[in-house]
Length: 541
Image (cartoon, rainbow, N blue to C red; front, top):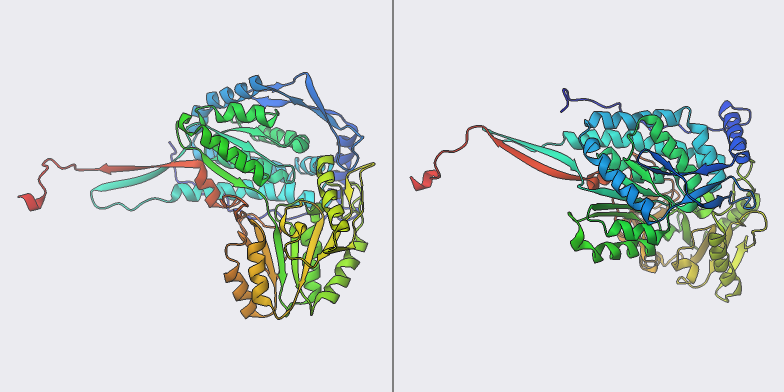
């Protein structure tokens, strides 16, 4: 037990470096990028105290230059998955019993390492394997992950400090135990910070974790594991395994010690996993915690009072940063006819000014989409719009995968508010716009609410406070993160806890104390100092 009540360092958001020409950080980053580009990494699985290599090696290539090999991953099977489970369970007791301040110190150290010697490495890896530009990598891989570590430590201390009242003669205490088993973290390609946090948040609370990163994020996942090791995370607390989804799911969901799923990915996959957990529910020692952030069909709605340039900028930034490969990216917009011509002219101008290419050329705003599979899926939506008599492409529409998986930022205008690309998640640089009658504000608000199964993010732009109030109330269930006069993306840890409901997930708000609550099992302890010696209450005497 601890010998003091400790105050953790006050969390502050990590400042974003600007990477201006001739700056030190820019020089260091590009140097690291070039080193990684020219090396070939053999990336192992991390199981207990072992780096595991196999004969099943799969090439890793940058999405923007898919013929160039930067390394390979080692894939395992059922044996490796079971080895990881056993390693986590072996580590569990000692890790769960470690004083909380020592667990906190590990992740605070990780934050400082990331802010210093690991900064260029994690950013370069994210640029190289996930094709993010300099600023997108800096915000995601460095700053947001630093924020996750520091703010979660602060939230953890707040959680432990929250205690019940005690009447005279008693002492009531509340402790927050780690879950009784292991956590399965299944992570996406698009945010290095999210991948690390899905592992780190449960681990910080004393849990052990089996981590399966996305195949297209394995390269930067290795840097995350090296960061954890450098920070002093004990062996077996977080085990990184690369295996087929079916192999790893079968082993994990049939194990009685499975105690929680921390997931970010597609809605369909999440529903499949939930069904698998339900099918095995009677086998588990405890009911597993299921936490997931899934898809989105994020909206922008402009009121007739909005400023056209502000609407256009929200679309250009919200839809096309990181090629629209964000769960929060704007994907559908509703523009009143009184603003449309001005908005249209600016977004077309914006798109024409976008420069597209590899991320080591820091003048490029647009880079490649993540994989050939993604490229083919997104391009089919563009082709559908080209062939439809209900839509017209006013900007972009071209794509080419000869060198890298490049898709032009594409703007579709439709006359059908239920057009396919207004309803379905595209997860790429495609924005679909519906121009509505400016006098049909309330009808359009209802349309926004009922068009999609998702409820992740959304934004309203307006100078009319009555309109803002009406939209905020009417769309209260349409978005877990709602933005007023801003784009619907760019949530910041400690400022806008992130998550959505409906088909977008369990809304457990990554980057807040609400998420940490899911990874503990509270126990109430009541101590009575002078116990009763006679069963008879006063009314019986």
